[in-house]
Amino acid sequence: MSTPDGSLPPTPDPRLLLRRVDKSYDGLDVLRSLELSVAPGEFAAVIGPSGSGKSTLLNLVSGLDHPTAGDILVDGEPPRTRSGRVAYMPQKDLLFPWRTVLANTALGLEAQGVRRTEARRRAAALFDAFGLDGFQNSYPSQLSGGMRQRAALLRTVVLERPLLLLDEPFGALDSLTRHDLQRWLAHMWHTYRWTVVLVTHDIREAVLLADTIHVLSPRPASVTARIEVPRPSRGGGGPRSLDPVTAAEVEERVLAALAAPVGAPR
Image (cartoon, rainbow, N blue to C red):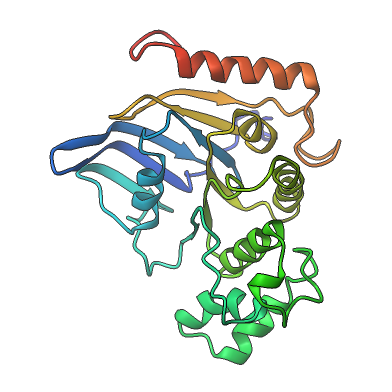
């Protein structure tokens, strides 16, 4: 859409930008010349073969590790663990069994210096939206797998960071629970419009949730395809609505990109 004077509106600066990123460990090349850009409010999925470096990518973006070469910028600055710009949810929920659910969800805020009373107040305010109201004083062992994952996500988003990293958050759940949580996450994104980078091995999950799907090659990984998911309406039809025929077509494009030889036209 053009502005009143006929010019195109300015393109927002990317929330996340990776330029020719390499990563090696003891002579093993994991990432090579990887390029990736994610706009503010975008839900991006990263998918690739097992062992292609998807979790390594998130470690670099979070500031837990550093690239061998290339640039990584979050809102124009290199990522650091204490930058206050990135929140990272790993594959396991990592809830402490001796802490209540409320105490677990407030832990990140407390770790960054927020007083315990205030940290728990902020976390408690999200319990209803995350479907956890009434479980504030329960312990992780009293929760279902899906509820534990929602608690882990609450602990992550209560930090209010501009960029949210999710590393296969539903991979260990049974198929029915995983499907329910995918729909729930779609609704939560629709409500809060976080900027998300989701690492997943599930093509259908990527198509359901993401605006863009970034396909990695085998190790040493680079992004070999960027596939846009054509939502019929960003504002209507429910969160992440997509008709079955279009969804199947996008899945086929992702499968073809994963199967294509490295260097082949995409």
